[in-house]
Length: 201
Ligand code: SAH
Image (tube, rainbow, N blue to C red; front, side):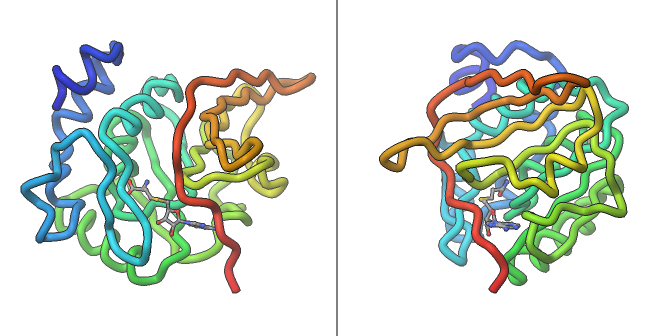
């Protein structure tokens, strides 16, 4: 997985490659899909949701340019896999998941595997986690047309916001936006496909 899927496709950051090598991806997929855990594709994790393809997780982690001291928020923490990868690259990771079942499973798993710097919450990530803000980086693991206002407000100046942006006709593009004292700096990265952000009923 590391060489074929990541290195040969241009993932360079040694810290990202190390994190991808360290996190046991098979622990984060449903039991019956374990044999497929390291394949080059997303997999279903229940409740109609998916764990992203390894390359996409590595690509997003690299795009966040984490150095180790950051506080990171992930909206849509799902299986907990991306949060586990990020936890090896930053100081603290906060993850919010809308599906109660996925939240409960991921919390139990991360505790069992010994991840101590990941904090998970069940709820609507549109609203962010104001008590833990500001964040140095925010990752949306589900697609939106526009960055939710409450989330943008929880990003510190100089911080990066990475998200799949819904464009026209169901296409999505991964975009990184840096918050500055002036106008945000927007950089489109790559076409992607994520499940949409849903609001709590
Ligand atoms: N990063 C995850 C991938 C999860 S897929 C992993 O590594 O497994 C996207 C997730 O976003 C889904 O689990 C979905 O339930 C969740 N989601 C959708 N809308 C949400 C919202 N408003 N708040 C929190 N999570 C949300």
